[in-house]
Image (cartoon, rainbow, N blue to C red; front, side, top):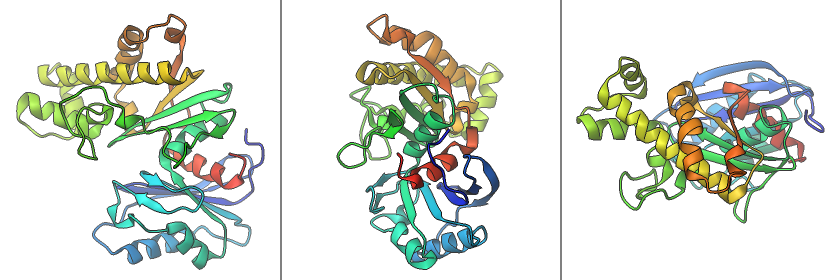
Amino acid sequence: MPKKLFPNIIALDIGGTKINIGLIDKFGRLTESKKITTPQNISTNKFNDNIYKLIGGFKNKQTVKIGVALAGQISWPDGLIINAPNLKLLNHTNLKKYLEWKLKLPVFVDNDAHCFALSEAILGSGQKYDNVVGLTLGTGIGGGIIINHKIIRGTNNNAGEFGHMQIATSGFRCSWGLLGHLESYVSGRGMIKIFKQLTNKELDTFSIEKLFYKKNKAARQTFFIMSKCLGMGLANIASGLNPDIIVIGGGLIRVKPIWQEAINNYFPKYVFYNQLKKTKITISKLGDNSVLLGAALITTNNY
């Protein structure tokens, strides 16, 4: 449980396709929540104003702080959004300052994968451990490192960018246009690219998943490649950081064959010390609310 979590924290998980907002109580419980579609094709000012109005629907006299999580490179603690790959209209803007000006409340903004890792370490699958790594598999890949209940941020708050781990010298390009990154293979975008290369057909991830269960050869080969690459990535994380536990979350954990095969068959093949093979790897306990709870936790100054 959190060391201290104030009552009535409003938390937001701002994604490229949906926004999740919730009210968190002092016990770290989500007491009220709402999901909306992320506004598209609007100006930055209009987007920020929409977020302000959304918060206004939850805000009351007891609201004390606001926590915001979104994907990308975010300066901590000043909240400057340096690069938001899923919401480029926010690049080089400061949502924190805008909301503090409008709401007259403290606002905290951080990378969504940091928030995921923190919530799993404090409230979820990693709460019994001191050294926790979080890995989110979605449209791209995010990550966070938690040691003794503290986010390890690195010099520029960029620690944990496991999606841009180099696993090949050629192949697909990641969201930054670079070759051979883990994100290029073990993500929603990666699944679509691999399947298209094998079939010359572009399908969404849900359609490819359905084909896998129908024993479609290309879909099965796609999952094989993804599992192998994920196993390699997990091995690199275990070898480089030697955590007690790695917690996997994000939308792609619905596709059990990918992560299950990676953990059981490929991860052990790519780690060199027998002790590392015993690294505990599991999926998120908090599910869709993990990032939202982490956004609340960063407001407490304990982490």
